[in-house]
Picture 1: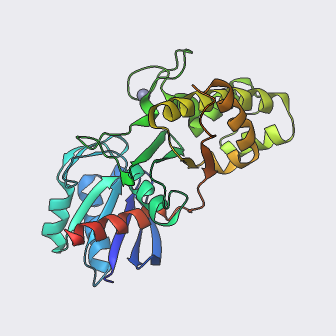
Picture 2: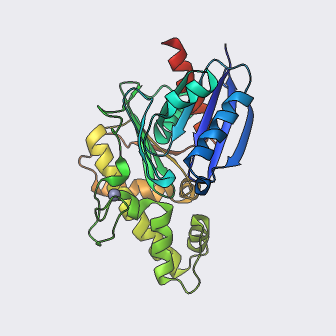
Length: 297
Ligand SMILES: [Zn+2]
């Protein structure tokens, strides 16, 4: 099978690697340095593609909205990009076919290929990081919607505390269930502020009252969001990934019980919840898989 390149273009770092079969041959990480401007960033991406040597194609995951043909970026807020025909630019520079997708879609493809969504007909990946994102598999296929905007799950409204979201609305899922939301809630009450989700889980583990209160608040809102998704999609499995997910291991049963209390019907079996076992190479893997899909035509 031919070699393809997967690139995970993030706001702070670019991770990339060559995929051969299911193996990532050589994973690398370099800083994005968006402050140096768009031209420099595109130069850097073209350099990565050229230095990959003999490859059949490139799949790039971006933290933003990609058009249905997967060649054009409508908007990437944390790269300050709007309307960039990135696939065409890189193809002209390198002569190698390029395809783009939303990073959460690519993480979902990776889960389908090598993770907890393997063999799942209807399933959901929820990424709980700086924001909340994810992907949904329906009938065995990744659902992208009509304009590539099919599952902006972080921006469904779930609360009533009047917390402003980056999208302009209030009380979106991500202001409650992201690592940012978890830390904000904890730091409002804690004597000493922390900057990592794992420190909040550690406080909960030590049975400190601020940790327990924060975790109760967090799990109630996460359960609300997850039950919305169960009511909408009736999934076999929901996989959690991102910075908060590793800590969730200790409270997964608690989350399941909260879901059971508020779900629409008792007639269905419990949705299976799990924590993603893929490491931060999921984006590279997803990019490579997308490139391979493109090669098939
Ligand atoms: Zn929002």
